[in-house]
Image 1: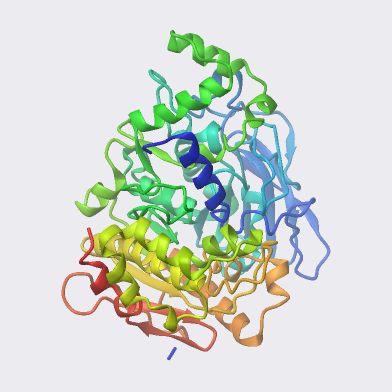
Image 2 (image 1 turned 180 degrees about the vertical axis):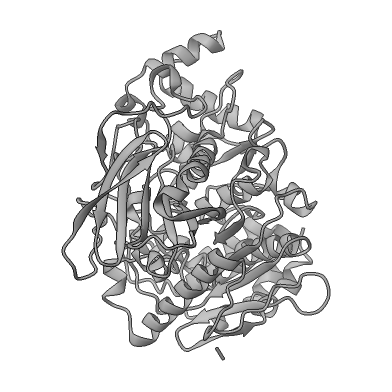
Length: 546
């Protein structure tokens, strides 16, 4: 086979959301991505619409890094729509990564930056420009508070004949800040990503890419952004296929799911303009810029040094959201997807089998706190109230190696699988949709996660199977390397044709949400083939819950 928000809530989300990076830091190397390929490197120059850039070419790849796609969002342009790049004279060196957007070190990512002139992207392309232009895949990294496009080594995908573009965008408060009267509140990161897609439309041909075959792809927070782009008027025509890995676009959040002090919320990433402004007001007060006049407050905030903003604990994680009810996202994206109000492009979408083990492991085992049977009972009661007993009967502790694994299974099914299923059902009614579940429960860990927790097929564990990741790659078994090669072939086929099928590849049927049994492809080292996703995640049981 083949929010309502509040300081305690924001702290809880900040602690729980530490793994939304989807591999954002694991591939970071001081010198950036090197072409490799077993041949002497040489310099190669390409003309973009803003000027010449000089990258590096080897026998198999051409790599260009740190190319600006928008002007510096600093000073009066902090919290403003991205503006055009000022053309440069001469040849711009593109052999090294550009600066990271402002971010602070975290438990899993010891990287930091205070540089706002960071709206750059990277291009990894096949060494030879063919007569027929190659498909383009634009990668949006996850987390929303840490990371950079240059941390993702795309040589594996480029080796399949795909031009890959990885993007920096404004993170945390710099991308998601909302303020009364501020145009674009809560969507500046999304606007950056659309500016990068417009750059691709103008410049793909210069790198051998086909601007009429652009796939936008992302994981976790990056996939949620793509759910937004699918419904955003500004993204119309900027991409022709979409890949959403472990996205939260139609996912809600039961109370306590992301930490014992974190209340529930109807949507995981979406906030109304008012809710986003309330979060902004809390942070504004913390920064000493609160004033009766919103314009005066904004001037104060724009004058602050970056380091002063980053000193506030959890300020970046507080804006791990997207606001709607504005020009970028006029309506709640989850509702637009459900009603069929989205751009008609083929979609490849899925998640991992054990999504929530990551968060349970980090919240408890990683900090030396044991999750006990009593904790399990309290968590069930907090999340499900009077129905806690029914959930416990469905997920008895006798079926799991530990209470922590049991709780992770509950939330994986209730929050992640139910949201993923709803997303697939909504999309497949209108567009070709290919659903998957990454099921390698022995996937190598590639982030420095403490403790000895069994993370299983963890959140974003599929990322190193598509991008070169040294820590994971050196621990791949032969079967895992086969899975990586197969997944990369299928993602490349999807970018090329809009379907993950092709010669010598496992058959992957479309997901059919209306009528018949919906098809989901299980991806594991020992088996690629159909899985009864609804049965595996007890979705019939969870349909009885509001």
